[in-house]
Amino acid sequence: MEYRFSMREKNQSICLVLSYKVNGKWKQKTKQGFKTKRAARNYQDTLLDAVRQEAETETIKDIQDITLKDFTNEIFLRDKKNTIEYGTRQNYIVMLTRFESIANKPIKSIKEYEVVNAYNLLLDRLKVSTSNLSLAYLKTVLNYAVNTYKIIRVSPAQSVEMAKDKRKKEIKAFTKEEAEQLISSIKNPLYKMITLTAYLTGMRYGEIVALRWSDVDFFNQTITISKSYGLCQNGKFGIKIPKTKNSYRTLHCPARLIKALIQWKESNPIQIDGRVYPATRATHSNLVVEIGRFKNGMNVHSLRHTFATLLLSETQDINLVAACLGDTPATVARTYIHYTQDIRKKANDYIDAIFN
Image 1 (cartoon, rainbow, N blue to C red):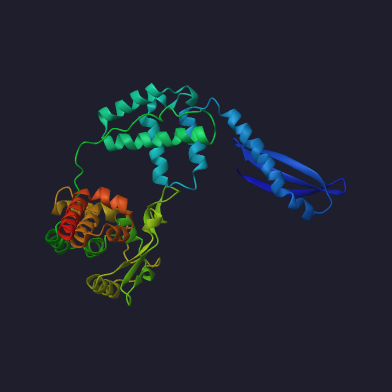
Image 2 (image 1 turned 135 degrees about the horizontal axis):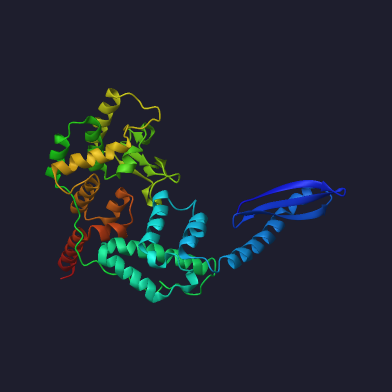
């Protein structure tokens, strides 16, 4: 809730004025009779708490008949504007178009069978993973309507189960030999350096192009990741905070990359913003074409998978790989399930050897 305090003198006393915005309209609440401005300031929290309670009751009363579409756009996304990224906001808007049959219905009139029917229509024309993502966004919005605004007591999507994707998800990774051949084949110096960095560190593309020289410690051979490049809250591309809290990390920088970075720094002018790689929006798409031309179906992210699979095969340490990637061990185990199954088999063999 937007609000601001002001004071004015009235009848030889101080009047405290709280201006606040609720449901798109500015209103005022006053309290007078204070002898000093200090006394009025001390009362600000009390007046604000009273207004918040009134505003919550008023808001809940006004939105009892709100549609799913209006609730998502005008309430949910407004409340979450500082906590979800621009790309995620767009996903919620897309969700409404996919659940078009219920989007314009009042939330309290949506039935479970209507959600099921709409979801089944999605499964008929979209991938299971895409359909499940839209259903997850719908569940989040409806749960917010239940828990925060008390529009309904139970979400009509609560018992709707997500379909299981029976297709095997293939990890697109290069072999070590292929990765080396790819790097050798790239002629553009910028593209070659980005590819080399991704291959030797497992960093995300956004993390690589957000790197500044101050993030590179040549003496200790480390790279510190504290930002990323991508769509920001304003809908424009730029530097932003990392994807997750696990994304904040310091990586070992192999001697091969240190040497390449030194040569890169010496042969290229320092950018005004201090970034290591002067990438533009076109850089990513051009690099995808370059990599796809080398091997069909592969992209920049394939280099991250390559780093992970090579490190997993060598160390069998899921926690280590997760720390390097800026992911959770659970995510690594789920993403690279074929490799982790091999690790479990080796563990079983070790156990049998030790205790038999």
